Amino acid sequence: MRKNTSKKIGVLMGGLSAEREVSLKSGAAVFQALLTQGYQAVAIDVGRDLASVLEREGIEAAFIALHGRYGEDGCVQGLLELMQIPYTGSGVLASALAMHKLYSKQAFTANGILTAPFHHFRQGEQVRLAELSFGLPLVVKPVQEGSSVGVSIVKLESELNTAVALAFSHDSEILVEQYIKGQEVQVGILDDRPIGAIEIVPKNEFYDFEAKYTDGMAEHIFPARLEPSLYAKAQQIGLAAHRTLGCKGYSRVDLLVDSTGDCYVLEVNTLPGMTALSLLPEIAAKGAGLSFEALVERIIESATLSTKAN
Image (cartoon, rainbow, N blue to C red):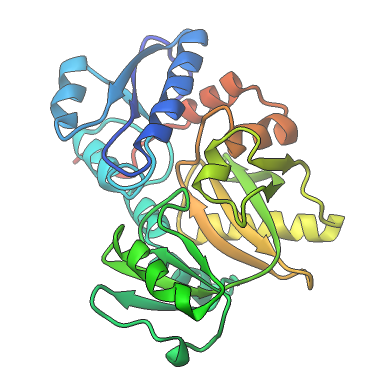
């Protein structure tokens, strides 16, 4: 979609996931940016009546500012495909793969992209330290959550059961991963090209929900403190992860870079945050010289459908 300010754009925000409040902030920022750029925009707090709201409002294109389940996992994308409303970001399959940490890790491994060794467990299965292929410390996380919701770093065996219970409280499937010590580096992808890599130094033990969304809880260093060849390598691995899942338009790829220069992909965020503290806008500003408004415009101009109506 090329710039056409006569088209009515629905900014989809809020939603039903654990990341609802973050999404509302992303959506509000995007909505204001679109208005500033002269677009006809409508802010839509997404509920189960989304289809009827889109129809009633006469929405002609959607900027998806949702995070987490029902918004980032292919569900809303499928609805928009069915209604033939062009939308921003990745399609149904790529969104679902990126949100599902097990399947995305399997895809990365199959394509030679390094990711932390892991074990997968379903609700009701016991997690026993002695039966794992690696020891402490380790990471426990739900298979389908974002923003580090339900994630724990386990350093003592006595902490394992509590961490497992927390992860299972958010999902019926969890991953137990080997802990990788390294720099937290996030690569921005825009128009299917890397635009820079930022390093995160959280005040907490890792880049958790509080560190992501509380001002002053994490230091952002751009460009990431990597030697030039390793910086380029991190960006290329980020792009490879984006492409492996079939992502489109834009994303943010989270990596851990260890002391030997190995880059472990943590996940691909197909709908990265668009708040004042979010990383993709910061990478776009510092790495590509794009203001927040210009970034939003680039994204909405790329709104498409993955399938065509018969």
